[in-house]
Picture (cartoon, helix red, strand yellow):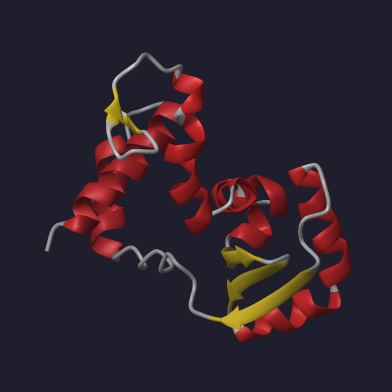
Length: 151
């Protein structure tokens, strides 16, 4: 990749890879800051599994974090907004979130469908001879998932 000189000609001289990083990273960081990417990627670890199951970080811009959740969860979190903001900033290592905004949205993943009794009975029969333990539990979960996916 050559660099254009002042007179418009390209220079194909050797350049360090480090000199290219700002040019490559700038468009990416304009779309999403590193802090925003970390916040969105690590949401489960930052807020814990209980809160992560009912909410997600939707957007982070100009110090405002937008959290998507149902109305009931938003109401509860509004009462705990300051400890939540402190926890998020602590996880990020510096104060980045000044304000938290809530938007009402359905959870990202639908709740698991109820297992039909016929599927449960078939899986129980197939694993009846196995000893109790993690292997049996894993096989029951796999069998339930496979048989539930069939129509």
